Amino acid sequence: MSAKPRVLVGRKLPPNVEARLRQDYDPIFNQDDVVYSKEQLLALSVDVDAIIPCHTEHMSADVIAALPDRVKAICSFSVGTDHIDLIAAKNKGLIVTNTPDVLNDATAEIAMLLMLAASRRAYEGERSIRTDTWADWTAFDGLGLQITGKRLGIVGMGRVGRVLAKRARAFDMEIHYHNRRPLSDDEAQGAIFHESLEAMLPLCDVLSIHCPSNSDSKHLINRETLALLPEHAVLVNTARGAVVDDDALIEVLQQRKIFAAGLDVFNNEPAIDPRYRELDNCFLLPHIGSATRETRDAMGFRVLDNLDAVFVGKVPQDLLT
Ligand code: 8YV
Image (tube, rainbow, N blue to C red; front, side, top):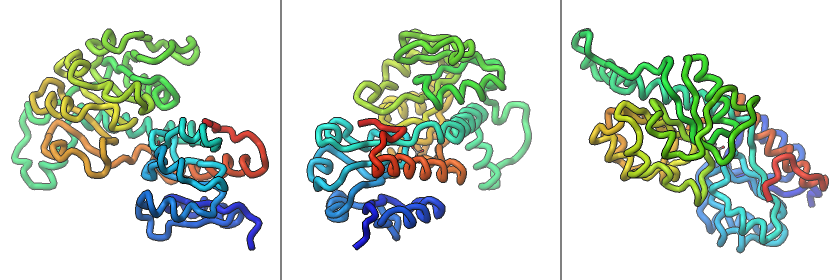
């Protein structure tokens, strides 16, 4: 029998990461890379020492309660932890870790891409070429929002939000942010703090969401808050779908009460609200914020560093509970 810790790996991970797992652990890989049901997840967890879920594996309170005592740690391949009931994990004495920092650049790139694509109507333009409906050039077709020199509001000025602010400064954007606490001058780099989200929204030409998804942020973007945005505003979401009330956002996009949205994350992925597909003023991506080779490798190695720490009895660098 192997003396190496046995680890259940929720989804297929990058080859370099799986190679290190194979070398240092006794892994159960997900060869077919399909999302396990709750029952499968529990059945596979019977004799493991740790689990590596992605955001697609829901480690809810009932799953955590049903895990055998042998399971010591949940080391998630994600920075977000909304798929893990942290209170249930803590109560059960489980170690939980995530992968902060390493995906800041990749996610900020996608936020920038969404901001530009939604503002400059990239979807409509692309479609006109692919469907061969680009009939002529006129001085009025494809008019979008120029973002250079405009105001960017950031909700959640954490690691990703701050990288986005840095990128946006290259477009001479004025940065505003709403956060639990004001940043130090060094961190803020001139970004303007708003204690109240409601006070910031009317100032935003672009609003980008970067807060964690939890009970405080659920439907933070709703009918009331959307109504405070200017009509030309663009909303960007690379955080989590749950921060946005779909009914409210779809309504303001349909009624052109804001200019556009760029979304990489949705409620109920991948079975998103089908009404999004009908909206010309919406640029949609399938949750690819961290999807670069460099970042996915770095996320995997961060998981392994955390896991290594657990099994040599050290405090993992990304300890959450
Ligand atoms: C990941 C993410 O791809 O890390 C996160 O929280 O949202 C994504 O960028 C995904 O969660 C992997 O589990």
